[in-house]
Amino acid sequence: MKMTAEALRQRIGQFFFPAVFINDTEENIQETERLIKDYNIGGLTFFHSRASAATNYESKQKIVFNDDSYEKIKALIVRYQKAASTPLLISIDAEWGLAMRIEKTPQYPYAITLGALPENNSNLIYEVGKQIGLDLKAAGIQYNLSPLADINNNPNNPVIGYRSFGENKEKVANFAIEYLKGMSDVGILGCLKHFPGHGNTNVDSHLGLPVLKETLEELLENELYPFIKGIENNVDSIMIGHLAVPSLNDGKDTSGTLSKPIIQDLLREKLGYDGLVISDALNMHSVSKLYETKGQLEWEAFNAGNDILCFAENVPEGIEAIFKNASPDRIFESYERIRKAKEKVGLFSNETFASGELNFENASQLNLQIAQNAITKIIDNGISELAFEAQKNNRLVKLSLYKNTENTFFKTLNTKLPSPEFAFENLETSDISKIEKQLQSFDTILISLFVPKAKPANKFEIDDTVFSLLSGLLQTKKCIIYVFGNPYVLPLIPNLKKASGLIQAYQDFEEFQKTAGIQFLEKNSFNGILPVNIDIQ
Image (cartoon, rainbow, N blue to C red; front, side, top):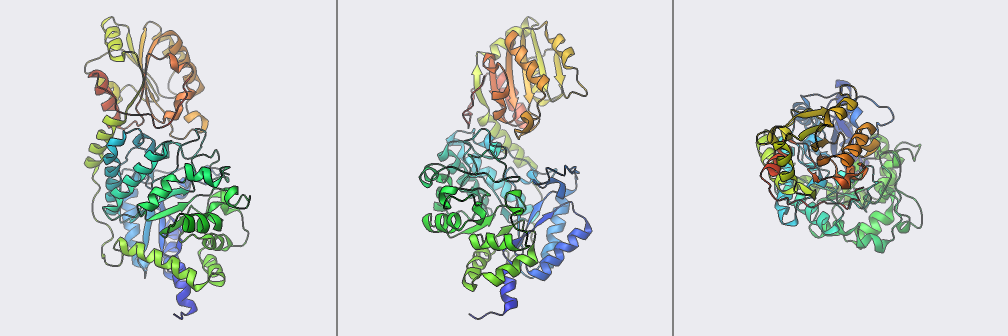
């Protein structure tokens, strides 16, 4: 079929999914509208704000929160769709729900929390996928760039950690597929990432290029397993990670996003995948600084085998580079994959793009069910009996770290187990040496540690004085510790093995705090399974 140069450029435009920001200026919004109109771009990838983009670590711009973000994204999507002659495929990272990018929207547990669920609770993973899908649909979004299929096999990973379902390849695969099915059943496209596996890396690919040392045989045995299962289950799309695998690339440290051997030879031919392939964000420093000529990065990524160029920063130049270098057949292949994806989510038949309001009640009920099955016992030397006995003798005290004593966990405990309470909130407002003195007259301490950050940088933002306090208490008192946060924090706590009780509660959600309190008071059994191997001191 003969096609004019202009028609071919219009098709190439469909490969470009530039980033857009919910809290952007009118000038930036109009610039996006121009891109949509002038270049027939295929879709958009939404972020909260320019300051929140992951490569903004060096400039340290402050993220300004905006309670109207959800209403803003809905209005922006309508506005951008009106500017488009071909309906846009709207995408977002919503691994744990819209809350990953948007304030005041339902948040679901991190993947590592879901990974603590027993296999026979996989229906809850399906429900998470379904609820997230419905939330996206309500906003007018059709494509979730989730879930991770990465296997958590490196505790020093700075960027995957809590975003992975764990280190068991079968569980990661099964849970990822359940999540995808839940979304698919409500008409939302999903995406497995980051091919060929970002779990065993210790470099953040937003800032540098991780290098995997594994051979193809080793990758097939472990990292690639969830992707292979996803392909068998017709996953809508696979995202290529900015990862170098020299063994697949003639010994070269070329990012997977720019590697024909990884995309064409391995993913397409060896693994037989013919669905959508999307690049990881092309603004990430592992690739964004490779080429001086604008448009060359976009061409190299397309030439390697990507259909969608996510966070492409050079749209006009990229279109021209692909137009000059790509064969019409290759252009048609990618264009057809994108067209079919749009057709699948009804973009060519729907007049309305957003379907309704968010359901916070459903999200809360689901989070409660997950909490009841995910909270994990690590050490339990009769913790409930110990606490009640100490309370009877006025020897029990409660200590909350990084949250005040009005937290839901303490409030729940206090219905049957009232006792004195102290809190360390931060170094500015709390005197840790004073707290230490006040605790001396008690022999049993029930501690709730609300881990300040989910990412491991700077020891999860836990102050050294807090680690020192915990270390001393563990050596001199009967300590029962509840950890509301990333379980990878556990090896950082000195003398943790000496705890009388250690319960991993994962999230600080109200539902998790309440469940933790009820389980303690009612001496309920714990169903959760630690999703990663952790060596506590």
